[in-house]
Structure formats: structure tokens, C-alpha cells
Image (cartoon, rainbow, N blue to C red; front, side, top):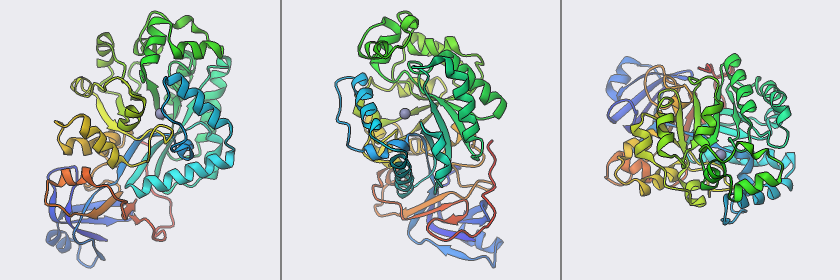
Length: 415
Ligand SMILES: [Zn+2]
């Protein structure tokens, strides 16, 4: 098949006007100007997308589709600890069926906004077998052992057993304030043997900083009340606390948030900049009124920085275009092409898929989206400004909404 469009934004060189992509099964085999591609692949079906831009499908590197049904349900709270209290009360009213519905609804919404790959954390790995994601999904089991640290190993092993049947999965020890150093170690051991990815929330809120560094504040009090052993508080920042417990310094992580980073933390983080990635969630950040995200500092330290939506318990929708715009408002000097990389090539690298996802090039998986171009501005400016549903998408060479062409499952390796 040959796809033709007014502009191809490949994220692998300059945009190509009157461009075409040749696709064989699930992969892109050739990219260039339409006449050249039509010439070298004569006889192939041509799908002409007309006055549209074609770009790689967007990659959401952090969300919790479990909570899609909590959109608008949790008003802004005075403290992060209060928010945890309110979401826990809301979760207590949900059934397994509610969660399945919520996850399915979230997948469809993400797809409508042009997302073709998603890294989704779930607190209910046992429900995954009941769900058929319409887009490429990395399932991460979110693990919390704050109430029962003696079960850390059992928890990590059980989650791995539940997720192993999935093509793409990982583990998400929740955060240093809810996951013990032992739970992190158990997850790292599973990651070592199973060759999977790890992600964790780190340094998200002022209250987390206050808890670990000063042994006080709302989060400290909340966790003390539910029985967490608080003897690890009062000396270290969250980042220092996390790295003190780390076994393998080279193990790649997707660190989510990192809003609270001291000068000392920066020195510590520097050594992980090559292997690990940072996920920033601009609208969730705004909802919580977190400390300013130190984008320039972390980027200059060499970190691969990605954008994501987080859950709808702290956001309005699952649009990565809206995240790109929220980021642009806070960082107007960052060129739109760099912002688009944070939703394509950067998260592809974070998921160790830099040779398969996030770009339009030979050998890459044919995960593509297209939408009409209207205003004669810079193409990247126009992409970031796009604020409607994406009506055309392709996943692994199959146009979404069309019946599957290939009976075999998408060939796709974990790494
Ligand atoms: Zn999160």
C-alpha cells in the first residue's frame, strides 16, 4: 500500500511535501516524494489522504486509564494528601466492571486524540485479560506495599505472572512514599530476569519533599496515620531516598514528574540521564499547582523528556495535543518541533522502541495519524495547535476502524 498526503512529518528529517509512504504488512518500507515512491512501488494500492498532514501516531508515556471514569469528580484540594484521600474514597465505590469500562473508555478516547501507543499503569493487573486494547499498549502493574511491606516479593512476582501473557509490559512501584525499598528491589529483580521496563512516580509534590526531608507536612501525617514506618523521613530528599535504595544504577526507569528536585539531587540524577527518561504531565502539574518543572535544567542534564496526560482524576481529557499546548504556554521559547518530539520520538526512546516507533522511516512500524492542514503557519506550529479529534489513524499497517487485514498478530518485539 502507498499512502499519499500533502505533507509528511517524519520526525526523521525535514517535512516532505507531496509525500508518500510505502507500507508492507505492519512496517514502513519506503518514504519520499510521491512520484519517486509511486515509481519504485508500482502496482501497489494508493490511498490518497489529500490535503492532510501525516505524522507518527502519538505516544502517551504515562496514564492511569483505571480512573477515566473519575473525570471532573475530584475538585482541586488544598493538599496532595487530601487529594489522595478523596481519590481513595472515590475508588472504594468502584467495582471491577466499572474499572474495565473505565479502561476501555480511556483507550477509545486516547485513540480519538491521535494516540497510537500508551504506557498505562493499572492497579488491577488481574483485569487485563478482560480487555482488548485498540492501540499499542505497555501495561505497567502499579504496586503499593505501604500497608503490607512483608508482601513486597509476593506482590511483584504475582503481578509479573499476571502480566507475562501480554506482549508489552512492565512494573510500576508507585512512589518512594508508598513502595518500600524492598519492593523496588523485587521489581528490579523481575525487570532483570524478564527484560521489562520499570516506571515510578518520583519527586512529584512539595509535600513529598517535606515528608522525606523534614519529616512533617500533610503527606507525612497522612501516611503516618495509615501505619507507614516513617523512620526513613527527616534526612533525605525523595530523589536521595530513591537512589539510596537502588541496586542497579544502570537500570533504566521512566521517572514520572520530578517536580521537586534540589541542587544536590541534580548531581545525583546526572548519572542516570543517559539510561533513564523523565515524564512530565503539564496539565496534571497545573491541576496540583506543583513547583515549576525544571525543563531546561533536566534537558541540559541530558535527560530524555516526554509528555503525558496522567489520569483523568487530575486532568480533563487524554489529548496529547492539549499537553503539547499546555507545555508550550509554560515554555514558549521551546520550538514546536521539540515539543512534538516529546510526544513521538522521546517516548519511543523511553520505551526502548527508538528503532520501531515515533518516526516515519523504513523499518519503523506503520503507526500513523493524519488530519487536515488549514492555516499557512509553520507545520509544527499547526500540529501543536490541532484541537479536534483525529479522524484517520493507522496501527501496524491497519487503518483503524477497518477490519483487520492480517490474521497473524502484529509482529513486534519487546526491545
Ligand atoms: Zn501517575
